[in-house]
Length: 244
Image 1 (cartoon, helix red, strand yellow):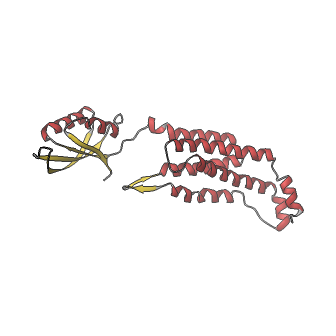
Image 2 (tube, helix red, strand yellow):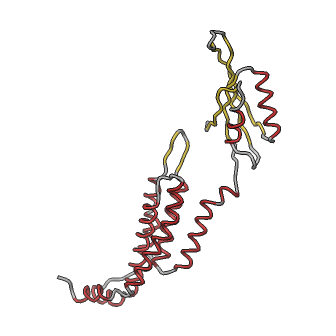
Image 3 (spheres, helix red, strand yellow):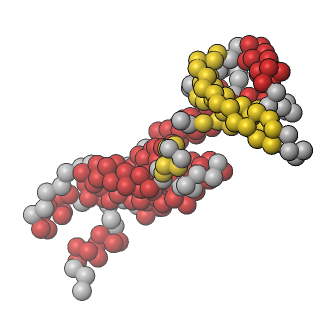
């Protein structure tokens, strides 16, 4: 049976129910906006996951607001002591397990770090919304979306990577490759190569050459451009990027 205190708290929790509803709705909006961007890029955590994280964090923040508003009543009711932000701190640290679930390793390449970071940011947004700082939460959500969508296009960092090129007709093809690299200001830092013998459709023995280039690209050039251009040459059989 509910005590008198419990009944009063349900009727008047210390914050208007309309305000609680607005905070929950705001959490759904800001979390969903970031989640839609992640889902559009087919990332492990999509719209629903981001909404749930933001909504859950907002609920914890609202709970802390309610506990603070009713601190005097609760303390006199059962001699309890309350520390503001203790629950919020647990949200910030606890979201790590969900972020870790979006990180995976495939072919010695780590993926999902950005989505994990976005989940952590969404949890922070949920806390802001739950505490009633709508303006700051909306501003931060816009900044996060700019980082996720715009920065990669405006600021592109080309790290040193490797490109494997398999080809025939060594002299002719090497001239073609080197001329392209020189024209595009692509620096060749290192080259590993090996030769294999094979028989073509007419049973004629031929050499197949494989060069593994370590390259540093100028900002205007991407590895997609290299693969696309080199694959157009009829002597080049395979072009692919390599992580190791």
